[in-house]
Amino acid sequence: MKKSARWITAAAVPVAVVAAGVVVPAVSANAEVSLPDKSASQILQMIAGSSDAAFSGTVEQTSDLGLPELPGSASRGGSGDSVSQALELLTGSHTAQVFVDGASKQRVQVVEDLAERDVVRDGDSVWAWDSSTKEATHATLPEHEARELPSTLPDGTAVPQTPAELADALVAAVEPSTTVTTSDDVSVAGRDAYQIVLTPDDASTLVGSATLTVDAETGVPLKVVVAAKDQADPAFSVGFTDVDFSTPDSDVFDFTAPAGADVTEVTPPAEGTGHDGHGSDAQGERPTVVGSGWSTVVGLPASTSTDAAVGGQPADQAEGDAGDAAALLDQVTTAVDGGRVLQTSLVSVFLADDGRVWVGSVDADALRTAAAGR
Image (tube, one colour):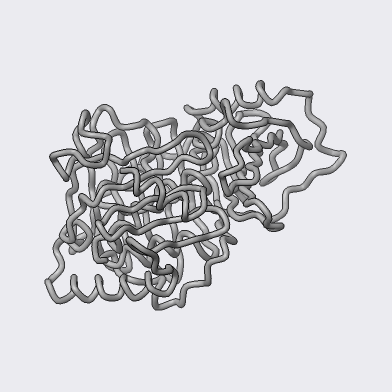
């Protein structure tokens, strides 16, 4: 159970990719917003051409996945309590400051309850910082790493996503299992924008639709709303309440761990390690992918040791964090043969007894079937 608890943060990766979560005040659609007509294909091309854009702004987050709000004491757990941190991203409301200068310089800064959490990328260097615990994590990305800000650091630290990153993930799922249509022109954060709606042609996915709102001038996605099937309110949505398309100052992306910080250096898996989830080198194992499109199931290997989640902590503190994590998981998951499941309106998580974690926008039975076949 401890290994499964440690992996819940990593499980948030495909959750965020499929559905990630931020809601902004209602989009304004009215006669004053009338843009030149563009086809859905042209709007998708605008998104693709915006990867090198520079901007900054405020993003507000909210989710409605049918999960209960976490009590304050649980959501403010230490870095060793990766379970509560991951679940916090899936519940409640959050505000982040976002700074982007092209594809290799990004900063996401979350400030809540007088605490600050930052993820900063400058080229191949990525830092995560939590002021409440005075802990920092650093990784140097290998050359094969994707250019955008990773969804997690190699130690499992979850990274909030911008609307652009979520839009990229959704657009990647467009063909061939999606119907793409245009919608009304709108205004978001004071910017005129186009809208396209992605509707899965896949009966097995929990995703009902995804609406992308795209800045008419730059092509940068300003808002993404993901709806679950048979749910009236959006399950997840991410967007800007204000945005500035000038280039952020370069020192925004400079980060030095403060004096007295507990710094952990982590190493990403080497390129070319196994993809079947059962490679000979556990530290190099990569996720198992079953299926494709909207009903893709991702299996995360049980390759992260307890030390990776609580590295540098005294043994008694590590055990305490593991116990708290297990107790929290017991509250939000259901015991089944072979492990425990977390079922939400949009995504499911299967925490297998063997330590692996299976995630997808499908029901929990589909996850267990995928796990049984591997």
